[in-house]
Image 1 (cartoon, one colour):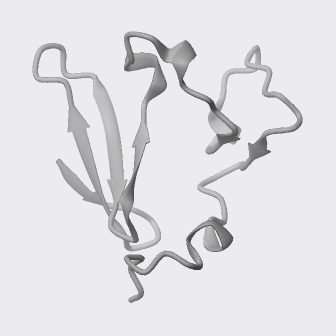
Image 2 (tube, rainbow, N blue to C red):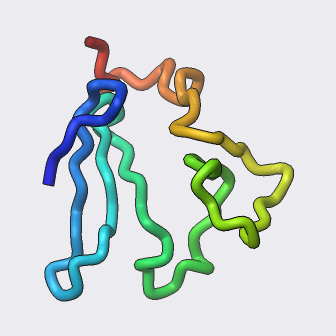
Length: 90
């Protein structure tokens, strides 16, 4: 399923065919990156997480490690993609 983000980018959501859970999101401005919804993985402990987005929506009891990158909303990923030759430039 595709939808427009507030930025104007197109987000493509992938869902589980069995249960309908959101599995991943691809942003048209970062075509080589997928955001994976970690709670849907069979072994989420195998994934190293170091960034958190949209934390303004997190539940109050969720505690995030202070040494992780934390963004209230989508975050500024400019430096992460500065040298990516496939990045989208409108």
